[in-house]
Length: 338
Image (cartoon, rainbow, N blue to C red; front, top):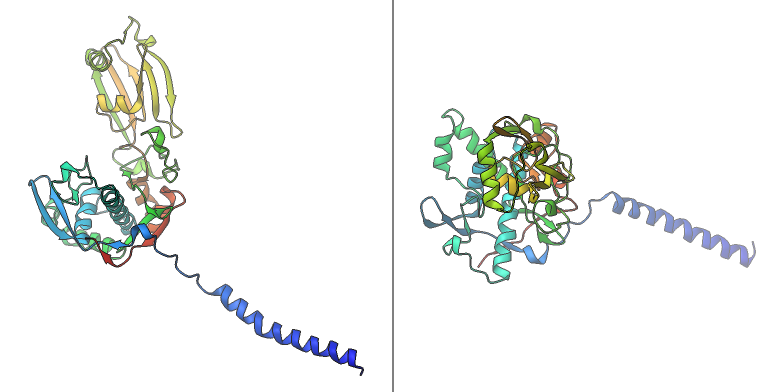
């Protein structure tokens, strides 16, 4: 065997040895779990004790953050719901707190409604909250302990988890019942928020408030709209009053022209205390009939939709990533808020 042949044989042996060594390494690496993503720097803080302004009692109380979250879940979602839906609600409540708290802290803003606390219990301003005692009294005596244990499990088993978009906690808005599809943020409010996109929401018909009917005397209908926009004109034929309707992607009323004046669907909802802006209008002889679908603003997670998904076998994280687009669920760090 010549020198050249010996060199070629040596190269072949080296190549085979490299193959034998490297291929198993590649396979092992490919099959192993990926490293957890780093915690976003903006949400590294972990909550221990927080101050809560209890509006009903007009006092500020210091309480454990997780105990506060249990009161939020108990107040905001039926305890009879699937545990995975309750877990999703727990993560949403925790995320909502962080989004709100960090925004106020980073901007050095003072919230008068909080009376010096971190958060309040006014659902119109923050989120609803109920004490363990009041929650237990609200539930049937045979279910009370079971329900509280269930809510505690939902909070404890998702401890420190929040939903983020672009390394920041999201504005985790939610509502009771959609009309079968959630709303894009800009079609209800002002800003286009990338993770608050319209998505299908099945199972909503199981909600007791999936449909509702509101009847208003014709005179009240006219007077309330006139008070809102004095320039409105009601001609004799009420069939001509509604001239134009613009709908959202989900089918709610975005804008509607009545008597020559344009109203937002959310305005009509507020004026006549409708459950949602997804409605139709019928005129009777002396009444106006609103046929309404859904309950709430329709943006973000639907609670009844979440419960339906949970009953279909979806886990809390799958529920969250369905209703909030392109988000991540991360665990916050170990530093206490100060």
